[in-house]
Image 1 (cartoon, rainbow, N blue to C red):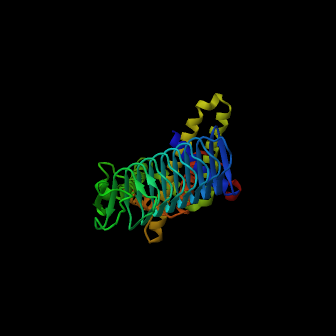
Image 2 (tube, rainbow, N blue to C red; image 1 turned 120 degrees about the vertical axis):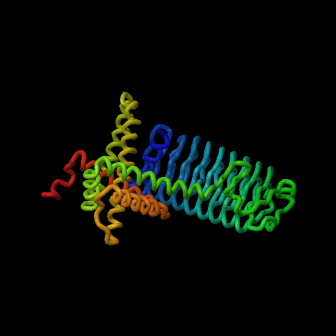
Length: 374
């Protein structure tokens, strides 16, 4: 429930924040900030959830920081773990526990008290890591001490004068033995050189990165959406056809209706929580909002698939097989669009809200655009 709530609040905050540079929602000790410029300045926060183009943790948090954006900066202490992803990720303040960093360019210039996981095109480590470190990038520079083991795969690996590995150094190389390692970094008896293709096999039973699993997960998600839509087509084919028609005929209306409906559900949960008496009902309201978003994504993906097939001269689906094909095409297209940096998540959000709007119109016939039909 906590992860679902976190996801919903971050996603739903983004369209609201588009009206301002910085939209924020402070709930209890936690902070949710989204917008073009998402900067946390308030002190006394436990966990922080930040999403936007420019994302900055400018005030310390006692708990965990979750940050997603284009430019991601950590300039204040993190009391627990840090999860950050973006085009550029810069950590210039200490992290007490583990850190997971992903971006085109990742730089660490403040200590990490736990383990480090860093992935990107360029990764530079200029501050000590108390635990172990797993790093995968094209260019890696290590100029600090790693307290435990370190596993690294890189096209170019550079060691600075302060580079140290306290445990075993696992080097994954195209040609094992090609990377020179100074004796000051790790003695030869604590270096294990392995072929780069063995990276997916893991380190002593633990696999830090499995691209095949990532691909399987992506295709699995596409398959799940396809099966849900196909099941819906078998149970209620006319309803699914009506929802598809609603999305394609008036996508703007469906999008705005979905935005209002999901926002109302999330807002109702907040209001209920404020009454204290209704606090127990709040998770149910947010769960309904989450399910509405999921249903909207299924409907939106199906409508997208029908539209794509139609653009290539295909006819409207009239049986279960054709509807399943349309759902698969739409789910695949939506999934691929979602991978586009910076814009993909906005497309997926809009698709989900549009589908949710079609469901809302079908169930409740809201008079949001009553004048438009007259």
